[in-house]
Amino acid sequence: MFRALSSAATGMEAQEKKVETIANNIANVNTTGFKKQRVEFQDLLYDTLTPAGAKTSEQTQSPTGLQIGQGVRSVATVREFSMGSLQNTNRVFDMAIEGSGFFKVKMPDGEPAYTRAGTFQLSKDGQLVTPEGMELDPSIVIPVGIDQVFVGADGTITSTQAGDTAVTEIGKITIANFVNASGLQAVGHNLYRASPASGEPIEGTPGTQGLGTILSGHLETANVKVVDEMVQLIAAQRAYESNSRVIKAADEMLRSTASLR
Amino acid sequence: MANGIYSALAGAATQAQALDVMANNLANLETTGFKGSRAIFKEVLIKADGVLNQTARQVVVDEVQTDFSHGGVLVTNRPLDLAIAGDGFFEIETAEGVRYTRSGSFQVDAERNLTTADGGLVMGDGGPLQAPPERTLQVNERGMLMADDLEIGTLKVVEFENRDNLIQAGHSLWEAPEELDQEVVESPKIISGALERSNVNALKAMTNMIRISRSYEALLKTVETFRATDKRAAAELGK
Image (cartoon, rainbow over all chains, first blue to last red; front, side, top):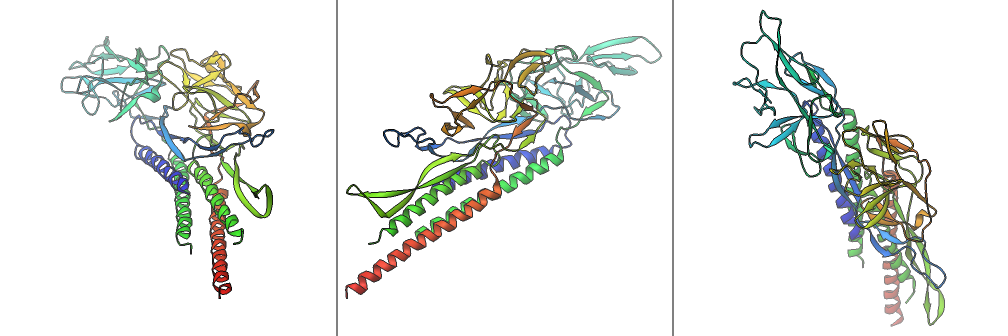
């Protein structure tokens, strides 16, 4: 019965993690480039009271052991990197990556970070930066006094001057991909950092080496589907309730044992 | 004193163990590929001086049997979430040795190996499955891991002659005893973008739990009745 109490407690703890993850997914339903997470559970080690195949007599053996489980643990939060939908904004520096890959930006500490949120702006020096002022890496400077800017599918940024038909190339956006994107470390602010699990970044021109292409004038919405999350939330809530009922049942049984006359 | 009090106590103890089993089932209500278990009771006769005493019957938990029926399917649309449609287990190489699982929430690690959520290597027909760089991975319905249109290998799905002999190893894995006969499923049916849910039925588990706690109370009441009878017998007969 004490095993029942602790198993149910692990169950409640696991469901709590699931609800927390769902809450974060739903909270970010309108966050550009957000990728939803899912908690993966595993059962805990079993308490083996009789091993399977133990001799029950000279000739016979027990076909099934006597193994009692001790609950559940959350083993990983799997991030799903499926594409979100594309939202048309008609702003040239709003960029979405169609396919896999991340924009590389420079964090204030100089370390690289990666993002799917392509809402770029110009800094006072004409550099392309994130809403928080982090520079795109390699850095791209848009010169003053140009008329129109275009971003190609392969990341080439070109411009035209007023009254001139000549097209000048100003820079090229490269994107990076990872062998195991699920292993990236989320650092908030829509940013991820490479980790030993994600592997080294593979940088390249958009549209090559399996990398996605850039679509200017669009933003990628979060890949969270509210209905799915709601269904998961209900499932988690009910599972939590069931586990709390186990605790109640074990408690009642212990109480009647204690009051045995 | 009557033997019944011991039978009732043994009964209560087994019900407590049955609750432990049920608690584990409910804790794993949302665990991918989890299979619920139930405690099987058996009656034992107590031997006194080598003679079976027919009135001293007791109950013990004989075995904990796993219900290997299939759980429902949860669609995730993640290409490396795999569910086995039908019987069989994925073969996983862990640090402790070869293990088997129904939980197909796989990923690719930094060395491009196909692994479980906690890093066990997923086995194919020719050893661990490893993805080539810069390709999109897919698994087709026959369990072939494809990188774009390149065939890498078929996921090894193993079926056992007697699944009851599998040993629970935790972490959603089973261990097979050496003597257990196994067979590789020739063309497994794999659903990609889906996971197999736990096969624990919350309604059944809750009903069972109520039955367990009521039985426990009834058995304790029996213990009390025996005690009261003995007390009265001692008091009245002693007069």
